[in-house]
Image (cartoon, rainbow, N blue to C red; front, top):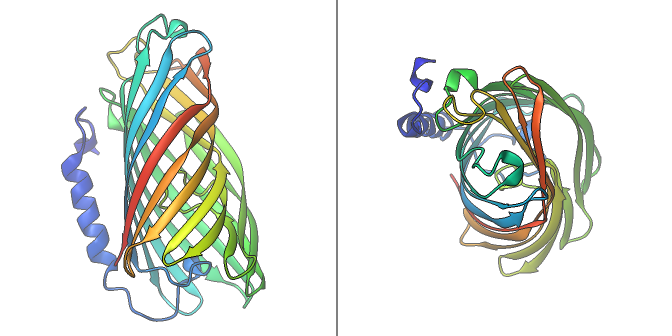
Amino acid sequence: MDKYRSSTTPSAAVLLLCFCFVAAFCAAPAAAEPAVAAAQPDMAPVVISVTPLRQFDAHLSGGGTVGVTRYLLDITAHKPLSETLGVGLNLVYEFADYNFSTPVTFSGVKPWGQVHHLELGGSVGYDVTPVWSVYVAPTVEFLREEGAGWDTAVAYGGDIYATRDFSPTLTLGLGAEVFEELGKITPLPLLIVNWKINDRLLLANSSQTGPMGQLGVELAYTLGDGWEAAAGGAYKSSRFRLSNSGLYNGGVAEEFSYPAWGRISRKAGRNTNFDLYAGAMLAGELHIDDSAGNRIKSDRYDPAPFLALAFSARF
């Protein structure tokens, strides 16, 4: 853990993890598709996605504005072990740069600035019967503002859920996501859906490698010639350790919102994809807890427009 104690961005560590990730899974055999990818039979062993996202300035209810620029790297790998058992790994690194202007609730001072999020997760999927499958996906995360120690910013938890294939075109599932996030236990229900309504229309959870994550649902329409249009909504939240030298020394910041978006996508060849997202973060809230877990500051922001462009490649 010592290598995470530095307050600088762990670029070398992230690059090394990426290399190990790809090397470990590119040799995946072309056998039956793993259980964890059952809803996406064309999934490649390794998918790498890079996404810049700009959330434009929105007014805070207490006065002032807030905006954020994010850069997201996501590497997802799947490997079948048998016709009924599959495993996977997921590596995520996100850098977020917040811009506050005279935030009155936070004493007119920028409450936090640059935030790092490093996540490493695994998954196991098992087809219990030809129609029933179970999934377990543990995850460990490091979430910190620049200047906070990586060892003080550890969160852990995971997902567990079961799915049933009601037909070749309809899969539904239920489960839960539970995380211990820097002194707070957060349980969330999971609804799994993959419904091919017809040859062009699909209702499904948002992409794991997309900027909104899987806690959302999209209705997608295939336009033809490699183009696709979609609209969706999700729930997003984040808790991270604040800098040891800031105004809220060693505290924890929390942000959550309900993003709603439209998406237009274009396949560029067999294994590459471009996704343009446009939408708004709705009902956004910002909170600060002290080091003992007591809520000391809270504010809301108006609907915040955002744009994101995701590039993904399959190997």
